[in-house]
Length: 195
Image (cartoon, rainbow, N blue to C red; front, side, top):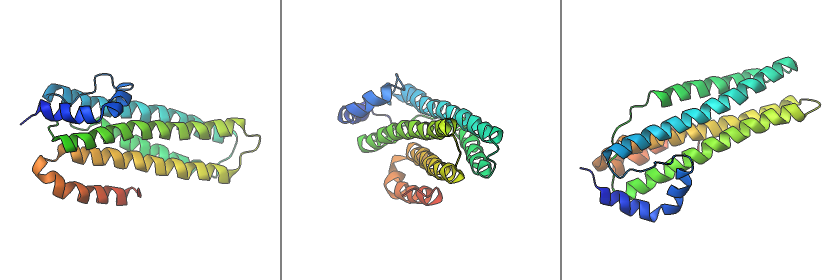
């Protein structure tokens, strides 16, 4: 059962957030089954694009460290790059289906979509910041790169957790949401070390 009225109520209460989302996903809407599938696909596509950009900068950073012969931290960055590859593949193969939720759960979904956009942007800024730090530094300090890599790993974990929580939210039937969502959310956050 699909309710356009539920979307209109949720959208009305979340207008500011939807405007921000529409800067990145212009046709953002869960107003009907067709739009909900398209929006679900667009969220995934946006995340894949962001991950691709981040992986490119991280790869360039790894190459730069090789050239500068700063090899002690390359394995850490390579592991993050591998994790980004795996996650990107998971996002690409996600099954997109109609999302039909009550106003309360649609509002939560809107917030997840917004946070995925914001946090994936933040992830890329962190990776670019590391790359710029290395380019500008006269002497590369391995400890600085380790610090950056830990921050990037935590941020990637946050993005992964947000996406997986969103996936749970968008796939559970309404009757299961209240009982199951918080259980799954806790499992995901524990697995990806997100508080």
